[in-house]
Amino acid sequence: MALTYTSTPPIEGRKFRCKRCGRVYAYPEDNGRPVMCECGWWYWNQGGHIVEQFRQRIDPPPVKR
View (cartoon, rainbow, N blue to C red):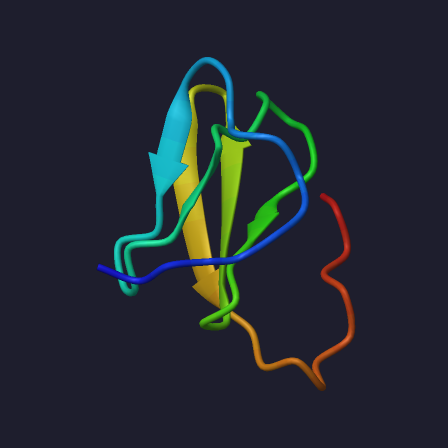
C-alpha cells in the first residue's frame, strides 16, 4: 500500500481510495473539486457517480461542463 507523507491532519469522515495506487483522500464533494491523485488519475463526483480520467501533469486543467 502506498504511503503519502504530509503535514495535513488525518482525513475525517468519508474517504476515497485511488483505484490505481491506493492513496487515500477525502471523498470528493458532489459537483465539487476533483481528487487529483499523485499517480495522474483525476476523480470527480458528478451526481453521486465517480467519474475518472487520466491527466498528465503537463495537461491544462479540465473545463467544467
